[in-house]
Length: 362
Ligand SMILES: [Zn+2]
Image 1: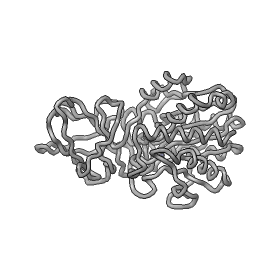
Image 2: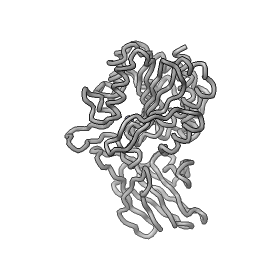
Image 3: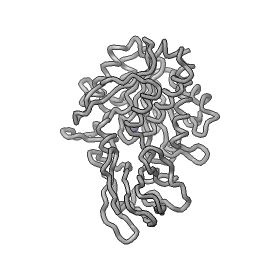
Image 4: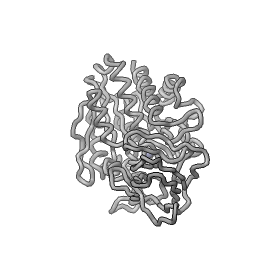
């Protein structure tokens, strides 16, 4: 039996194996607060029943257990009552299950986005270089002079946001070609590209040379540290007249309370723009298996929503004053019974966001 993280997005440390119990912990790397992302592969455990135990007893696993994949493409939740706690789960490997991937959440890797680009005809262009020198890309749908910008993975592990972007792009390419002649969608789906590929948390990074948190969504300063943030901010400045909207897609904390919801971060320095957009989004998603609810609006100056720091959206508000909407969207990893996040339901919600974009700009 082999337990490893030797693949893009992998993150695990095997501490010990004691009979049928495998003691593990995830790697925080440059993240200095506790965080929960993990992803590992088990090979050669056919027929065995194993319990995977995160040794520090911290929250690592959500309501439906880990996300599971046999091909690292299609994901489903373990979803067996009693088979998981927030820090352990038990899995019985079928007789043919020679390779099984387990992750904290449903993964979205760059290969999937490239396949989407090919399928629906996105224009893929060089955008920037990551800190480790990897080539990063932007993807554009439509030919309009005006544009809406969509980003995700300022925090590497927050894959729900990339499924949202996929849904927006599918909806617009299938049903709103006229809109796209006036307004294109410009997206950089993996802002912390290194973190996504290396399987980092990405959230709360303290990079070498810094003594405070400076992750990609804290980098919209005068001279950004990450080239991708610098390029994005320069686009806000140079194309300010044409940018109609910006949505930065995230996932919240692992679970509980508001973290189980889909919520738009409201702010009070842009009038009613975001609240009005949220209402459209509620309307467009109301029939869906995974929805945005009006009672989940996240008003300005509540909980942690008073920190306007050097974030992507704060930069937009400053640099694109005529923008029709600019907000952070938080999409839960798990959701709740009756409002569940799955590999199918999150892109459907993204489609509703796409319809909301079109309506708000029509
Ligand atoms: Zn985030």
